[in-house]
Length: 138
Length: 138
Length: 138
Image 1 (tube, chains in turn orange, blue, red):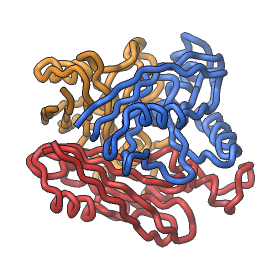
Image 2 (cartoon, one colour):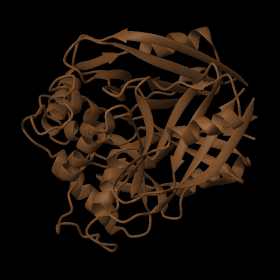
Image 3 (cartoon, helix red, strand yellow):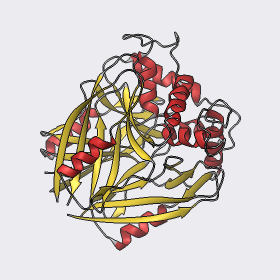
Image 4 (tube, one colour):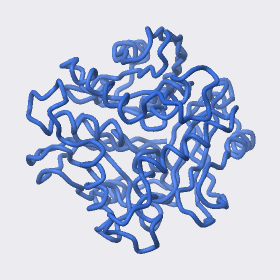
C-alpha cells in the first residue's frame, strides 16, 4: 500500500467553475495504482468543489444562476468584511463540498462518463486557490 | 492493510429515495475488516447520495417535497436537453452528495442507530444508476 | 501503514456551531503520522459537519440565519414527531455534511489558514452528539 500527495494552485477569474479533472488524472498517471482512493481537498471557505456534468456548459451557467438566486448578495448579512460577495461565498461553500473522494478502479479514476471535477469560485474577483490531492492504494 | 471494491447498479423507479444500506453491509460481510474506511461513489450528475433517517418514511417524503420547492422544474433554465427535470436534477445533486465515507469500527459500519444510506434519484423516469464501493482497512 | 480510530461525544447547547478542530488535532498528536487521511463522521441525521471560517464569528451567525431562512420551521411538514424543529433539522443535515475527509501533510491536518471544523447542531434543545475519527497513514 502506498500514498502520494500533491499541493497545487488554481487561478480563478472570478465567480464560476474551473474544471481540473486533467490535473487529477495527471497526478494518478505519475503515481500509478490499480486500486485506491483519491481525495481532493480545497483549503478555502469561499470556494468549493463539485463533481458535475462536463459535456454541456449550459449546466454550469444554470448552476451559477441558481446559486446567485438562493445565496444572493444582500445587505442583510452581518459579515461583509471583504465586500457584499463575502458572506454569499461562505454560504455557497457550505451548500457544496470542501472535499471529494473518488475510488481508483483498474488504474483509472472511477468517474462516470459525464462527470468532471470542478473548482467553484464564489468570490467576484480572481483568486489563487490551493488544493491538495491525496492518493492511497496499490 | 487490504482493499476491496465493488461496482453495482440500482434500478430506480423515478424521483425519490432507494435505501441500499444492506448492500454496503453485505459487501463488508464478504470482505471482513475490523477497522477501515468505506467509501460509496455515485457515477452520475442527476442522482446523488444521502445518509438520512431510516425509521419514519415521512422524513423522506418531506425531503422530496423540500427539494421540489427549492429546485423546482421551471422554464428559466437554459439547459433542458433531456426535459424540464434535467437541470433540477443537476442542482439537487450539487446540493447533496456524490460520495460518502463511513468508518468501519469493530467490524461494523459505524452508522448511527437511525442512519440509512440512500440513493436519491432526481429524474422523473426510472434509471439504472452505477455505484462503486471502496473499502480499505484490516 | 497504520490506522487509528476514536469515538467521542460533543454536548451542544441547541442550534448553532461548536468548533472541535482542537479535538481532531489532539487525536493526530496522539497518533502521529506524516502523510495520511483523516475522516470525521457524525452519527446523526439532525446534526451535521461543516468546515467554515474560524476567524470572524459573524460568519457563523449569518450561516445560522441563512439556514433558518431556507429551511424554516413550518406547519407544512408531515414529519414532526419530535416537534417543529425535527424536519428542518433533517433538511439542514441533507444540505451540509455527515462526513469530512482532510489530508494529513507533513504531520499536520492540511486545513487552510481560516478553516475550522464545526459540528452544526440543528435541534433547538441541547443534545449529546457522537462523532468518529478515522485516521489512515504512516
